[in-house]
Image (cartoon, rainbow, N blue to C red; front, side):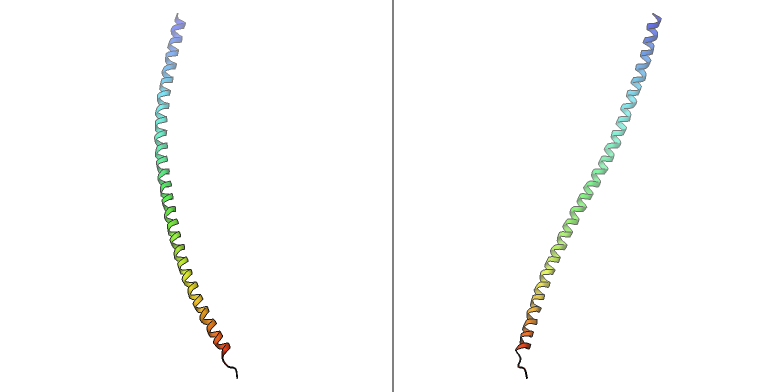
Length: 99
């Protein structure tokens, strides 16, 4: 009978330690999950910021390219006009009477 009582006491102590371990593990889990959620919130904020900056840069680049395209069109138009003037001058030079 004493053996059974010893075994019961040992089992009760083991269950008590297991219960304490389970409570500690639960608390540790809750702390780690809170830390994980905090880190994930920070990562989400950084990702949103990175995407926002990327979109802003893409818009600025598109605007720069549009302006460059307009400038290039203007330059080509001016160059074509200068080329026409040069050709007219050359033709007048070639058409002048030689002595």
